Image (cartoon, rainbow, N blue to C red; front, side, top):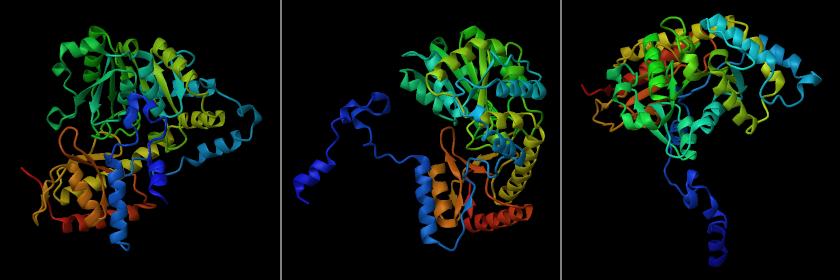
Amino acid sequence: MSTASSDKNTADPYFQSLFADRIGGANYGKDTEIYKFEKIKRAKRKALADHPDRALLDFGIGENDSMADASVRKVMNEEVNKPENRGYSDNGIGEYKEAAARFMQRQFGVTLDPATQINHCIGSKPAYAMLPACFINPGDITMMTVPGYPVAGTHTRYYGGEVFKLPLLAENGFLPDLDAVPDDVYRRTKLMVLNYPNSPTGRTTTPEFYEKVVALAKEKEFVVVQDAAHILLTFDGKPLSFLQTPGAMDVGVEVHSMSKGYDMIGWRMGFVCGHPRIVSAFADVKDNSDSGQFMATQKAAAAALDDDSIPQRINAKYRRRLEKLVATLNECGFECEMPGGTYFLYTKSPSGTKSGVTFAKAEDATRYLIEQFGIVTVPWDDAGSFLRFSVTYVAATEADEDALMQETKKRLGDAGLVWNA
């Protein structure tokens, strides 16, 4: 191939300068930064290549390991063959919204009008992408807890807004310090995005914290969006909905997901509920973004919401696995305790090894554990250095879980990890 031909093939396409600034503008596609999860994937590939006979102990998976309950799949199998389910559902069918209303009443004592205070979403992720479109103008602020799920912040920036980070620090019990937010930030804040039970810290919150948030929202005039994806995976008491708080319905919405609590990863079902005007604004944006989830899927999800035994079984499984993992890690030098919720265990990252290897940050520890010992975790360096262990690993029986814990204990023992005081 001639040099001229090669240069032609590597030259920028004519539209390179047309990419929007929000995704990088003329530099889109040229960023050489490697993102965290890509680094983990590369380290896993290297570990498998270097040690083909050593199985990975994968605590990095962030999604349920089981299929949806057989009863839910049975409904889906029946509904998928009905002609009346073939069309667009737009902003959702009444059957799913009504099931969501029953769920909120039964679980939390929260009364909602399914016609005006609930709208389905194709999984909770699109809700966090769309809600900023309802409120954010250039210069407006979305406050978000970090570490956390970044989607609402990404779309806030797309609309010319800014993100103000609320760090979740161990010394504050992984709750944001709302008193430390400057008044000029509050003046420009349109949205506050919370997430409890919190991913990845596993922290649950209290009625008193939510009461403070409601009072602040009214005083400073911002909207609250509470991410309740892990709410049914609560272990330290009854699940707590933001909408149980007096006045919460006046200031915001809560977003629920079928994924974590119902093993419906990949089914893409959730709902936004709360103040009817906010739900209506979300529905208007959604109506211009998608044409609704498949009606058969909504009907299967409605059946799931009406069966409390499903989340109870899933909760018991992940509670059991977390208890085993906490005990194992504590035996290996980690200092951790049972999380209040989620299927994640968030624990201080080691600073190095007895052999003299040092880790400047959690990302270094993660890469070392993967490549040298085949143990996969997810690092978080946003507010201190922490490792996230997930108990969504594949294990068919409790005996398999116990065997995995024994192998984890052995490998971590061989790693000889140490922590700075």
